Length: 591
Image 1 (cartoon, rainbow, N blue to C red):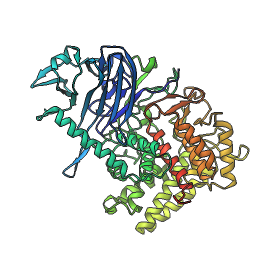
Image 2 (image 1 turned 90 degrees about the horizontal axis):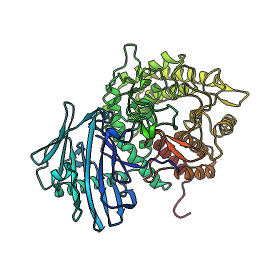
Image 3 (image 1 turned 45 degrees about the vertical axis):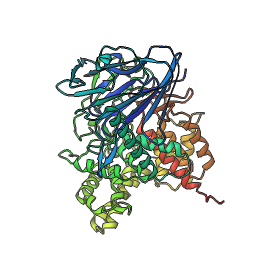
Image 4 (image 1 turned 120 degrees about the horizontal axis):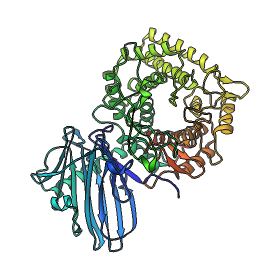
């Protein structure tokens, strides 16, 4: 049986919840993206869940997003009747101010027949080690510890919920999960109003995206997914909302992705900027500006959503997703040297200086930050690092790092030209030449391609970006030879691309890294191999789950989804590949 992740996600920038096609909340960290889950049986049954359970046998279920929103609708069909569960988190503007309270709303609606249900509410904390005991206070169920509070309100008897009693579903049932405060008005009226405002917010946000007429549905879902991964309080962008979903079964490649990698932030912003959205860039620039480098001026490759440095990695005594261990929280990659991050920061900030669509650009200008980051490119130019793939036990002089030294210096050059800063311009140009020299040291004449690192023969799919980011002319002999070598060694017969195939700390990779396939599609489009790009794009899009969400990894033969889910990298890759294809195939309506 094919493995696909059986959940959709909802959220509003304050939290993310995973809800499966049985309307069960199986993963929801609370109160923050990187907190313990209060519902977490995705990785261990003892970590709690929130389920709407019918008393008759389920015959069919289905799950969809309401059009152009992050509102999820799950239909449950049983032998005696059917009902729907609508889940959402509120996000809307009120009196000109964005509102995204840490609330979750569930609306349970009868559809056909006679259905009895019970509401099973089983929150846990500290990764299942702490049971939250309820009490009823002022018409609310209250769960609280020294760290968190959760308030439950409903228009059915709270004692029925706590005693897990069945009741006939003969009217819409509303359940709210709140971080604080009591809803004073009628709960049904309040949630209906929140629903209307939230639906309008998401559909209006999509309406203002710039999406060319290619793969629009996939781009819209990807954009909505990416939007949920930016933490509204600080502007940090997390790589994924999950931890320890394995890159392949029993591989040990189980990581906590609930943090902000500076690299991932760049890729996400590139996708959202391609979609014409700039609010995320403005928020992220504030996050970057508030990060505190080390005494020697270094930035870590990743930080917490609040910009904290220490992300100590621990292994928990949990069963793991489908029995896959270890379950990790924290990520020791924060200790790595990953020097590509400096170029990605500069590239992320470039639109704040150049894009005329951003009003009052001057308020974002921070030449001191630009200078300091450029200094780090200079200091680390000859330093081996752990690289994009975060190798744990060895360092190399990675071609990918030199590529981002080059393009980061190029971004600084553009900023210097815009602001007429001659000294900054001269330094940026010199560093571009230094980076180019080092990139060329990675070219292997015998293989006819750029290799992962200086002095190595290993191929690396990340170097497709030598083409997509403009270092190589896509029509040059070198570009054609380079992509041919990657196709020969890293491409599967189905068309997916491995990130690399040499042994790393855990042996040889068993699954393909999905963003690499999208990089390949983008490179094909750059090289005017457009029909190939479109055909492969459409094939890859068949490998989303039932609501259009993509995992980190794909097992090529089976099409199985693996890795943390949904993965921002994958959705970023889709948007940027679609954007490049669309730019190459633009036609008039009248042609």
